[in-house]
Amino acid sequence: MSSYRQPGVVLTDRHFTVPLDHSDPGGEQIEVYGREAVAASRVGDDLPWLVYLEGGPGFGARRFVGAEAWLGRALRDFRVLLLDQRGTGLSTPANRQTLPLRGGPREQAAYLAHFRADSIVRDCELIRPRLTGGAPWTVLGQSFGGFCAVRYLSAAPEGLKEVLITGGLPSLDAHADDVYRAAYPRIERKVAAHYARYPQDVERARAITAYLAEHRPESAGHRLTPEGFQSLGILLGSGSGSHQLHYLLENAFVRTPHGTELSDAFQEAMHTSVSFAGHPLYALLHEAIYGQGDRATDWAAERVRGEFPQFDAAAALAGDGPVLFTGETVHPWHFDVDPALRPLRETAELLARRTDWPVLYDPERLAANEVPVAAAVYHDDMYVDTADSLRTAAAIRGLRTWVTDEYEHDGVRAGGPRVLDRLLALVRDEV
Image (cartoon, rainbow, N blue to C red; front, side, top):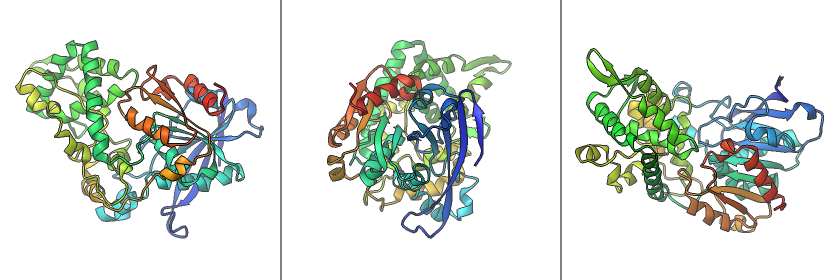
């Protein structure tokens, strides 16, 4: 355990050993990492703990510099644990380089089945008493971290003092098909809003798509395709995403001795935006986080996309319609074009076909909930369906919502202290 300082904050590296499979506590162990943060002026104070669960799946906790964003507000009241969920960051990372240590695709898929919300919550419950002496703690869950928080309320509410959720109230019973059937119309609305703001991007997107369809260039081994270009629409779910996408498109083409080509700058920016090298678990487990019971997810986003022909880029180019971007969807072709995913294609197939996912949420226990809970629900959130979120909010006894269109899905980042202030006031019944 080592400690060090950043402006206004003292940070401590903490490492914990937990079972890979919590149903076999004496079996294989893995390491989970958390970064403790405490205000420099309060190092010696007896503060309550807040554990932060990042969005994803597949992302380690945000690496703050000092007391920036919401962390500064949290440090006024709490000692904070920024948890790298299992398989992410410094917590026994799972990727194309490490997973072959498990064996072949079948062994890899069986291993990754232990990396969903149920196991993450069990990790938290082993870690909590080591830090708090047994006292319950506050959970702040962003996006998928909110899914984990709802699992926490279902499985171990005794460990919770209060729960704060930002953009992360999941449907309690929707299949992955239902999730994406609701998602594509939301994505289409975001694309329409982008093109209304930047009408010049309609022709730019068509030109880029046509170029990619003809040339299929590569950047750092990543094959750039029309479908990959469309997936840049994932940017449209954040507060500044539309503007980021516009700036990316305006730099797409450059004149060369061989004619007009896609610029190196654009190809690098596109490759960086769509690569899963930094978060492969997002691709491997993105549909698995919705798996409950004996029904396979079976590449739901790819299958359901066929119900929305307006997203067909080739058809758009054949006519005069706009090329529609897509959003938070993972497809089989990702495992063909991305060098970070290619070795894991068969593993992904096995996960997509799995039919024995444990049920994640307990509606009866949630209906009897006694833990104070507050949730920020973002109006027309591109990533998490607002209607599903509000149904779940109504199903959790005592949960208080803040429904807002002031922020997009990344509100806890963009709004920082204000968002956290609002949720703390709600959960403490101060408003």
